[in-house]
Structures are given as structure tokens and as C-alpha cells.
Image (cartoon, rainbow, N blue to C red):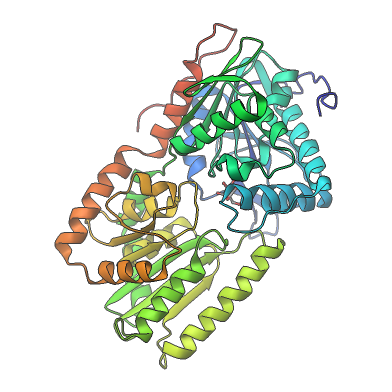
Length: 491
Ligand code: G6P
């Protein structure tokens, strides 16, 4: 792996090099077809863009990432005031790097092996070569002493590869998903290379303190470096810090959206279309086996079967956003959920009143805000989740301090949203009890809980997250030629 990375001279976009370089597998834009048939870009709805965009603007930044698909003639471009440098991906790279090693090996391994990870040497080799391409691209665009912020499990080798080409850079890495305990990580045939890849960064950020601790312990055991609490001491004198930075959402933006008259109108339209049930349960997830969709729908169906909930009183709306559809485990999950929803509706539905309204689709932020406003009980029950931003989005839209959140203990968000009805998603009876309690809770109880959760989410928003990471990265010890990153103006 070491010899393969070539020295790169800055290739700059239009002769410019950047003081801040964001490197993520995905670009923050999606391809769209314009009315006149031409193709354009639209900013993706995710919260990460909201967080990073202001930092990019204030710092003359560029974002390197893959826009999806296999287009090959992609030039760097500006979108919405952001400089974007697209990475291409061949069909083999999509199959072996993205679907294979990233989502068939690392994703299930890092999520408590909820799905079975597959270990294939060709997938690993492709992971190495794609990480090299990202590192070379970043090396070519970063100004002298620039800051590079690398994101997520698809790019864990980039920090070390980049440092070898450009030792002048300040490098941060942030993992958006959980970092597993040593007992699981150990399975990985390339465990040492991944740890060394991450150690190329000056700061490695995790969602929770437990992830940082797992990482430091593994570095000590598997790589043999000396460590002290969150710091790793490398033999060459360099220090790497590992710490938790729980990610969040644009809470203010979500609340503003939820208050829009157009969204309020949409809430009423959807409620009418659902047949005006007294209460609405809601699930919103990427269609992923880590999310616990199957078990939650079963729990709801059992409550109906036992007569605790009547379909004339309550329905369940489940939004499942299509995801990674070429990966086998995701296809199986889709079939399983299709069958289960069909069975539940067959057993408990009445004419014009299905028990589960199942939507396999993705929606713009406005529509999501309307769904959140509509939900009396929001059900977020992953088996394992780095954070889960849906839970925080729900809380942000409940500006009247109402609505109940049922939340898995195994979502990172459970560390902050302590006033939710916390459940173990493996315990169906426990989940049924919590669903029923949340369904029957009186206004005083829901208000007490929601008020506390709203305080947490509004005070710890995504801008605070980005600032905390950036401050920690730029305040690190060392007096190299690093430029100082400018914080975005306060909102
Ligand atoms: C998770 C990961 C992201 C990823 C997203 C969507 O949130 O942490 O890195 O981009 O899922 O998945 P996709 O495979 O479509 O990029």
C-alpha cells in the first residue's frame, strides 16, 4: 500500500488551491433533469451540507466527492457558491469499493454485525485504490498548510495516504457511523491497515466517547503505540487525538420550515388523505437492515392484534428511503418488508383504512417537515446507529412541545435525548409497552419530555458541531505552517 501513492503536484481548480478541503464519498449535490432536458445539480437535503457550507464559504473551501453514477467527463464546478470537485467512479469501483468493501464489509461490521460482513480480497484492493485517488485529488487541491477534513468509513485510508504526499497539511477525520468494539473490529483481515490509515489524521472524531475509546484501545493493542486517554503518541513524535463530537442538525432551519404556512397546509392535506385518524405513528428511515423497521412494524401489528390499538383510531406511516439497492442484503430486506406490510394490512386493515401506509420513496425537506408535524408518536428503533438525525429532526419541528419520541437505546441520539421513551429494539415486548405508553401519554407528560429534548437539540445544532470539530483541529498543539481556519459567522 505504501509504495503505491505517487507524489502529486497541486492540480488546482482553475489555478486556485484551497485553504479548506472537504473530502467525502458523496458530493453534497444530486443530479437533476431540468425542464428543458439539460442536466443540472441540486443541493442534497442532508444536514452535513448545512453544517459545512458556512465553514467552506468563510475559508475558501472545496468539496471533493462522488456525485453518484458512472459519468466520466466531470469538470470541477461551482454550485450555490460552493466549489465542488467531482470524483468519477467506474462500474467496477462502484461494485467493489462502494457496494462491496464500504457497504458489504465495513457497514455491517461497524454496526454490531447486524448484517453479516463479507471479506473479499478484491474488494479490499479496490478500497485501497479508490482511497488513493481521493487522497491524490485532495493533495492536488490543498494550498500550503491547508486544512483537510475527511469524512466517514468509505475513506479511512485517506488521512495516512494524504499525509505521506503532503506532510504540511492539517488533517481531520470524522466517522459518522459507530466505531465497533475491539471484539468485532478484530475480525477484519485488514484491521491494522485501517487503524494506520486513520492515524494519518491529527484529530479523529467520533459520534460518542465509546467510539473514541474503542479506537484508542485498538491502536494500543494492534499497532502497539503508546496512548494516554484520548491521545496516541507515534514513534516519530507526532500526536493523534481521538475525541467525540456528536453530530446534529440545522435545528433552527427545521423549525422555520415546520412553521411555514405551506407546510401546515400540507399537514392537513396528508391528515385528510389518511382518513383523519386520532393518532399517527411515524417511521422515517433509509431502507437499511440496521434500522429495525421489521421489528417495529411487528410490534405495532401485535398491539393491533391484541386490541390495544384500533385501526379506526391510529395508523402507522412508514417512509423507507430507497438505498444501496444493488447490495444483496438490502434487496432481501426490501422483500421482507414488502411481505410484512402486505400481511399486516391484510390482517388489520379495513376498506379505505390500511394499518400501515408504506412509502418507498424519498421526499424533499418540506414534505418531511410535514410528516414530522403530523406524527403523534415518532418511532426510531435502530439496532445500531451512529447518531440518527431523524430523531433530532422530529424534535426540532415540534415547536409546540408536543409529540412523543420512541427511541432505541442503540442510536447515538439516545445519549442526548434522554427524555424519549427509550427501548431495546431486540425486545419486542418492551417495544410494545413503550409504543403503547407513548400512544396513551397525556399532554403534560409529552410536553415535559419534549421541552427538555428541544432544549438539547436547539442548543447543540450542526453549526456548533462543525465549530467544535474545527476548533479542536486548529487548536491542536504544533506550530507548523498551518493556516488558521475562520469560523463561520454566528446565525
Ligand atoms: C450514512 C453514511 C453516509 C452515507 C449515507 C447514505 O449516513 O454515514 O456516509 O453517505 O448513509 O448512504 P449512501 O450509500 O447512499 O451514500
